[in-house]
Length: 389
Image: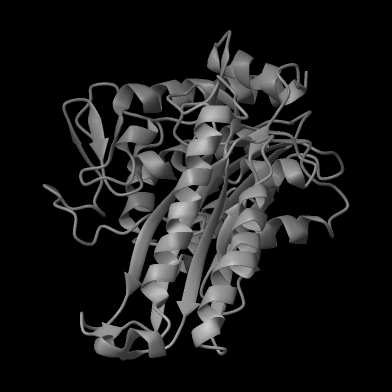
């Protein structure tokens, strides 16, 4: 690092970014590095692996094990760099013009690095309130790993009392975010020569009708609500992101597939859209298809889903996070996180971490040095709050 006042977390940050933990890859090298680092401070880490054994969550407690504490949570996976035009090596943290560049620098290895950098202070003095470290896999592809971690915590005598998820919020305290439901829909009709369309059942046209139905549903939600002005946009959003079907212009297409994403307000049940689509397929689309192709199908598969977050303004974790961040206000965001799953498991949660979501997932992803310094100040205040008097 070239800054005159180096970050406390600099070495750890560089190591973490150096692990290529793209979601398709194993994260074990990073997790084992963190496990060994914690062991060097006499802290035992609990690893919760996936079915393949190639990935793992890490959970550790610093301080008294017989009472609930504050969880510092982050995901270890990052999005791919494939097809992006980087001007620097994505898995080698670099600094220029007050910015720290690298894949995951913003989302969200910076927060994890800061949490780890303060382990010596957490471990070096008696704590009145324990600190739990919770690092997961595969958040970027549907918040997969944290579900297994939370299920594992159910078997422990003591669970966290609250959670701070270090997603990039510009160090604002975020107490709410939207949920997400992602679907893939597969339509199967019957192929035939295009001159004999009466003998076939066109899967592409049926899929197009479904996409149009969803577009109208999205427009109705936009125009009629429900609304929450704390979010941008202030309504649940719905869009078709991919569609694929057909072989040639002179063949009635037998198959078509399309993907849909809903980002719902915390108070808006995502099953409202799902049930509407299923009813439209069963009552309108399939009967017409099956008049010409009795074997026709319309299948809906849930790719991923996670709940929204809605933590009360006067919740203890909100008050704590605001005091640590030096903030008077809270915010809501439209992107999602693991925090809703913590809340669903009975662990109140907020988001607060360095960087801005606009800087994530892009080529030359970065986090400002100033943001990392603010995160370190946040963590230093937390050390003082949880130490025994």
